[in-house]
Image 1 (tube, rainbow, N blue to C red):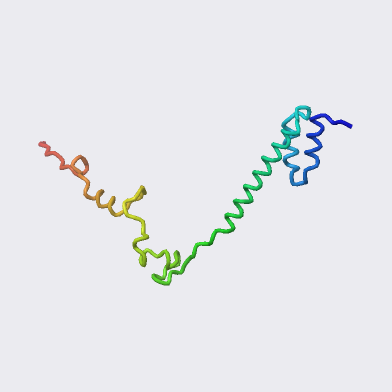
Image 2: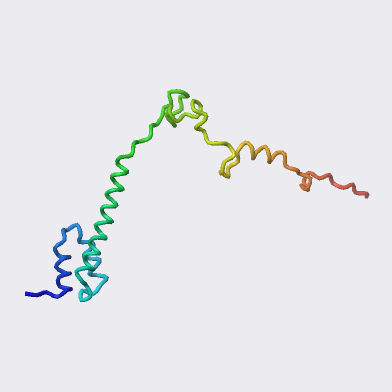
Length: 131
């Protein structure tokens, strides 16, 4: 008994384990059965398997990461960090001031106070008026 190319492709898809039901449903909904080939179905199955193994590798990578140590700090007593990351104990680990942030740091506040207010009309003396 000989089967056509698209029949063999359908048989291949039907023999997949139940975990591939979503793929099977997706393929049958988006493509005509008469257009299927064994190579095409194999490619779709291999692509799905590759995606799944990539997800498994990500999960494995995440599960192998070590949790960061958290407070309290034995050096300064803060509950937000561990002694190994304490900036008071390790000032060399502290981020440099004046970085890329847009917040108002001490330097920006000082510059704002020294600002030239000569164009500020509220501070200018009112002209004398003769009545």
